[in-house]
Image 1 (cartoon, one colour):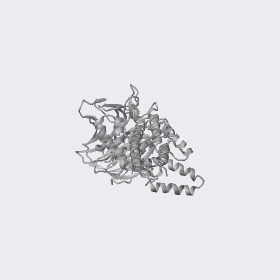
Image 2 (cartoon, rainbow, N blue to C red; image 1 turned 30 degrees about the horizontal axis):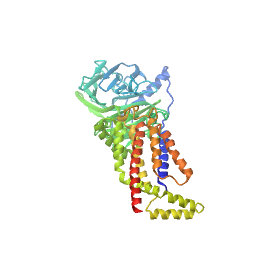
Image 3 (cartoon, one colour; image 1 turned 90 degrees about the vertical axis):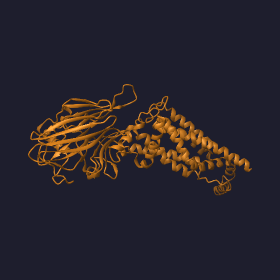
Image 4 (tube, rainbow, N blue to C red; image 1 turned 45 degrees about the vertical axis):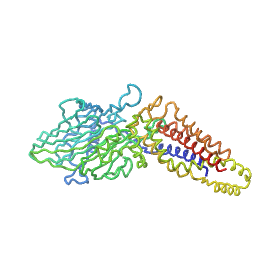
Length: 559
């Protein structure tokens, strides 16, 4: 087997496989839109919808579900969009909290513009408009048919806007009362520079009877029909619900029969709704067993975490709490919010390689401050790591180059006797101590690293819109002028010329054309990945050139 031929075939197969996998992964489906409610029958449907949104709770605090009574007053579906809102502005978030249930119904990420154009608005993570509907609900469910502060209940607020003072924590309280002595203060706590939000409930029971309830968080989102576009990297990212059950992370599909039956008791886990680079997640209190379910309400998926029942005796107070995360998938922050919450940065099956690779890049970036130069330096470090492994392949190719005239002579002599041709070639390989398949292992070892690099560049929000220099202003998207892919193609052609050409003239022409094919394919990949491939190719050329010189000198000395 010929080394350059193997290298080029593997590279072509690799890129083709990546395109096919990316084209087919994570398809969702769109549920039919629900009709608006305007008639008595429609009102009944709205009530059914409200009931479907509420998690069940039983006196035995079990995982099985016997729903408690509906809330005393259930506003019609869609009331959250018209209910009064409280605006919250921090140094990183601009949010709306609906006074119906205290839902998070709008979230703008102030440090993340939608695109690189001047004046671009910030990324909007939560919204109530279709088809971008995406809200985070929360509340308390009560037993015995008592009124309950669910996400359908109405709260009051002392102010309609809260703004964070520089460097200070911001607390946003809203209040609900049942009119019979039970008052619940629901407080969101925001921290400077952080995307985590602490959620606390303070229950003041001044009634004559004990009050028992269970807290819950529910993420409701439009079910997407994902449309792929080779011009839009974001279109390939998974968008939908996911959970961590305390042991493993998995993505969910509400239209999958098994996922739709999700009903698990989980300790030290979390629920989330993912999209490219951003996430909304809810992390239950540590040590408490929560019940996770996945459901569907019209064209919305509902991923819910409901906590255990807690009793608040008459004349006392009680507390409930969860932690929310609303923002970019910043791994440094995610690690401190919940167990394995950084898994929402989904590198797929190559996580075991991608995570240490990202860690290395992050450490280099701390000193360099530029992700483009970070990619170049890390590529150089990886080349050093694999140097001894690739040196074997390089020496084999260099020796193949030195004996190329003899190989050609043998091919001409035995062109009509393939058996004798193979025998003569193997004798030359044996005499010159050349292993024609020596390059297989180094190339196969590097393929997973290349794929891991691809996922790091695709999934890591730290590199979203990250500039390099000159015309490359976003390493996570394709080169707008295709300059890097062209340079990569030129470098690959130079590498091809440096290595021994296939003995068959037709094969030589085909493989000489391979850099053009790969240039076209790589033109649509993130420019950061093309930069990695270009750097790796240039370093490979330098390494092979040096090895060729050494082998040629050894051959002259030996002769």
